[in-house]
Amino acid sequence: MARRRTAVLVSGRGSNMAALLEAAADPAYPAEIVLVLSNRADAGGLARARAAGIPTAVVESRPFRGDRAAFEHAMEAELLGHGVELVALAGFMRVLTEGFVARWGGRLVNIHPSLLPSFRGVDTHARALAAGVRLHGCTVHLVSAGVDEGPILAQAAVPVLPDDTESTLAARVLAQEHRIYPAALAWLAAGRVRVEGGIARVAAPVAEGALASPLPDAPALPTNRAEG
Ligand code: GAR
Image (tube, rainbow, N blue to C red):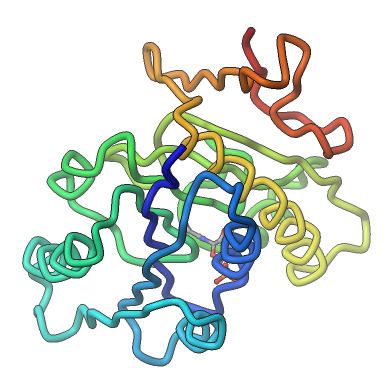
């Protein structure tokens, strides 16, 4: 099967991008990373992508003076110029317009550092600690018009420990982000995801049969169920 041409959008250090690049280094992985795009020229993820030999592009938002649609059209010129089919947001810290989300609907995926729908927005780890939750985690979801909203593809939960700080909790969550994002992008790229009534269903891969789990190498953590 042809690999789906995928862009990763980053604003910062790019550790999730690196996890996706590592997964996609396997020719059997169903997504091929053909572009890493950032809205910040100083994003650490760009240097990591260049070091891996992946084409990069920078579209700064500042020159567009708050005209988000114009900024997104400039980004889309890069995406279309690279023949991109799927877009993976990996710490991309700009809110996208409804128009962009509609044009890329079903082909636009995001990772968020909380168990959605809890803790949308920023400072998720500090807010989880302040709320006293005992479980925290991360979510990969298809992007719909609301911020940090859309059909959930995968989640992983971690315990919140009594002596956790924001950084120890963030590190525990990030390790899970690096595990579930490559898995969820693979399901999408392989055409295994369909959305019914706002709920994403992930079909089992044909070759693995009815008993296959969507995360076959993973310990028993909460994930979306497989069908089949
Ligand atoms: C990740 O924790 C990601 O979940 C979060 O930004 C971090 C980026 O780290 N994304 C969001 O908060 C989006 N709402 P990375 O650059 O090392 O992947």
